Image (cartoon, rainbow, N blue to C red):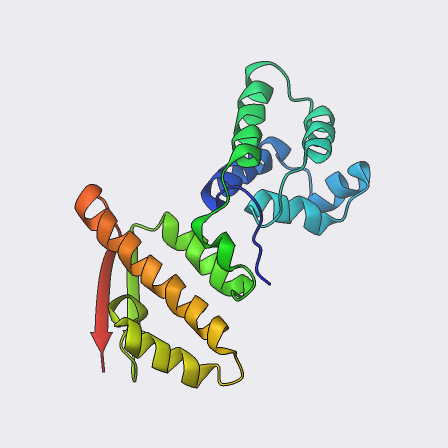
Length: 179
């Protein structure tokens, strides 16, 4: 169901930002026309929403006249994206929406998270049983297995953040406001 692409989002976005900078004042439309791709392919690659394929990278680098250390640096960045391990949530891809997968990707590199809830306990503070009841009620048509998988994702997210709290001094700071 969900796929935001291989590699981690931060690596794809960093690569995309470098490609956008290399494009200079040329428009995505003009680059797309010269590479025989749509302008959205150009911009989605630059925002990290789309994987930069080998053929696309080589054609773009040639078109932009990238050479020497600049091209080598970008080649290393693109190889790092291609060689990245799948994210931990990929085993739940059949039950995650693309939007939820994107949230998980952003969360991996977040330095701060804010939740505002009016009627529910925020996901990172929910017990497993509460999470199951909320998920089952919210997604009434899902099978028991799907609900359990979504609850498992929440539980893993909680454990990962708690682990980062202990191991990484600049872990995401979470602020909660319950109304």
